Image (cartoon, rainbow, N blue to C red; front, side, top):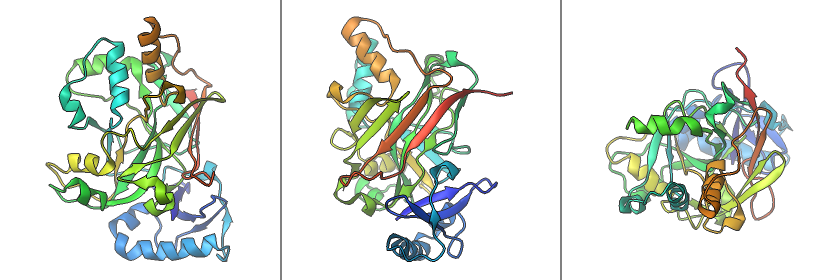
Length: 328
């Protein structure tokens, strides 16, 4: 099934069930009003939502209405936790090679991860607002999972069983702020503003055979200012699958329902597939010619991110955003 949160003036939105082809939707009011309720009581509430989704997909839902992604908040508008990995080691290799740094051996066996802000996610069509173009505005096309409860010490296989939904993410980065922050030795903060999410979160079964081994074996398309700059496969080259990423978090703590775990920038060794963030393009340019050429995003720039299934239909709907200045 596919779930979304419609804007209704509240912080958490109104839960709706969306048809597989993203054409129609139905309020889930009789079952649950917001997505976190469902995650907290998954075994009881999700079968009821599945029944509604089936009725909707059959065209038999009496109060269905046309689905509009522009009315969506993030599927989970605020979450108890947002932890983002860097599971595509090719991305790490490129960025480090561009600055003449080696990749530590531990990076191949122990995932990189940071904990970002989860109190203010963006909807799929909300502007990326930034106080200054000088901050180095960048998109990052990623996939993510939303979990149920996963106990401390869970194995990667057990952690996979805790995945409830999958989502599409634009993990916005402010590249020019990152070096000074990392130099402090305490990680990202101001350089990681609000992330944006695709209109719908989907249960793993919606991906069919593309959901294998805790990875999404589909292409993530990135279109910057109307030009496709990336068509990167999120599956085979994901060094750490989502079960491993969740288990990494659960090593010393319980992971509670409503936690979101990101894959990090989707990246492929085949450079002809393009890129899922500008920083990677700039790294490639530096490796090839000694200096980056591509500039970061400017006010008025647009970014569209989408994943299509084997049938050609959009899986999560599209993230379709514009970069805008802060209006004080």
